[in-house]
Image (tube, rainbow, N blue to C red; front, side, top):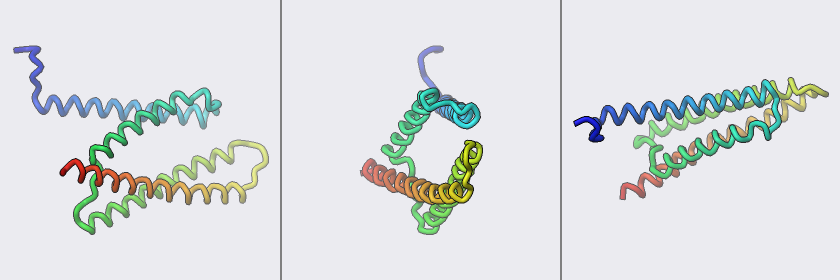
Length: 154
């Protein structure tokens, strides 16, 4: 009976889990590679654009498929929706702090004339725009995914 292709659900689930973990590892390595190339080695954009495109295209593909299949669902209860919004804001704030810190350090290490007030104001405005953009886009993705989930259910 060997080789017939009959697979237990546990085996199928394990294979899918390993594939997902492999994709996550690959994504993490591409991000680490980009961080090293951009911030440590300070390469020109044309030297790392291929790595960046691979990461962005693969990530967008996965996200669009999840949205289209309606996999991001809002909870049914109003209090759980409030908890989700709160965690969305906290996650957005953490991402904003990380982004602003990286940009601020990058500005300080760039060399040349350093106007600290200008750098702080520039990064503060950028952080506000980043926070609004990231929290809005996450909420938009949830709403859109719910819309597709409702369409697929009918």
